[in-house]
Length: 248
Ligand SMILES: [Mg+2]
Image (cartoon, rainbow, N blue to C red; front, side):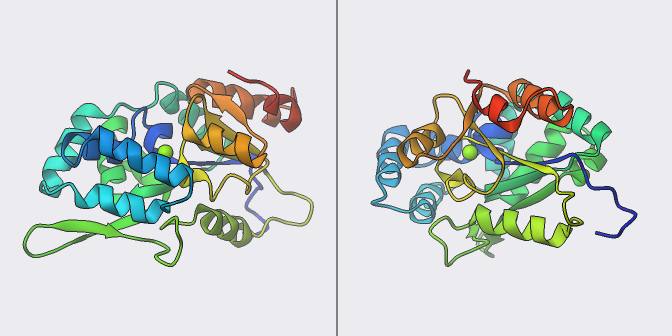
């Protein structure tokens, strides 16, 4: 970061599926085009109890979907809603110079297609910084996930991405922004300890994990709650600790 670049008041890292979107697109594909919801829920239990890691379970889910990729994207565009508070939150963040960084265990082409669809504006969609897995396409039309960190049980170890982002930003001594993370699920476990305040979606697996592991968090229902919390901290109305005490 050059000396002319101001240090932002905050940086908000966020999961994509089930957090910025109201439903998880990979769960949706598995439930409707792949091996179905009952099988996926069994697999989720295996992950929570750590008999299967996220990368292994996610691979099995995606491998059960044999539809062409373009068909999957069309279905997701029609069925996966954007979080109702996200657009206003993002607009406010831009006005405050607060970067919003997407850190996803999903696949880049799906995220980009949905984002353009939601924001209805390719240039705004381009502004959002996204770290995700990729997709590999074969000549026969089949596709599969390309992991960002294939050596990790998470496939994309979000803690590595967040640590690297903060290191590369090279904030001047004593001028570091507040760091926030927003997530809902197993794929966020690797990020759960990396920021000052973790927003975990009410009633979802990330809350279960945080309770079990003693990871501090607060809860949210949609991005309006996250907005309230981030704004109160940035404007000095509440401390991180005070926002953490708020439970939905
Ligand atoms: Mg998620």
